[in-house]
Every structure is written in C-alpha cells, then in structure tokens.
Image (cartoon, rainbow, N blue to C red):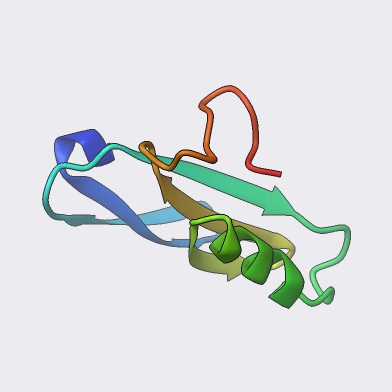
Length: 80
C-alpha cells in the first residue's frame, strides 16, 4: 500500500487506518507478546534501535514499519 502512497498509521481490532501521502517502499511488521498486560517497551526500543518506527499497540500485538531500504532489513527475514 505504501508504494502507492497509502500508509498504515494505526491498527485497532481489525480496523486499519491509512493516510494518503508520498509513495514510499515500506515494510510493515507485527509482533505478538504472550500477554496483553506484558510491557511492550523493550520490544519497541529494540525495533526503533534497528531503524523501525512503532505505529501502534493493541492488546498483545504491536505494529511497526521500516523503510525497505534499511540495510539491516531483508524482506524474507525479521529484523531480529
């Protein structure tokens, strides 16, 4: 979607919110922690250190994006 200018900005229980913008080649990721009460701070910091951006967290699931040009990123493997 981002390659067409539609960027994911928020996720809330199967409702995905997109915003129209410049075309970009972005990769979206999601990660599920064992419990919704578990602290996502470490996961978010780790992802941002690797060049990602935290979009939102809903329950036990966190959503992120990274530029497809991020050198630490490969399309077939997660960043960690």
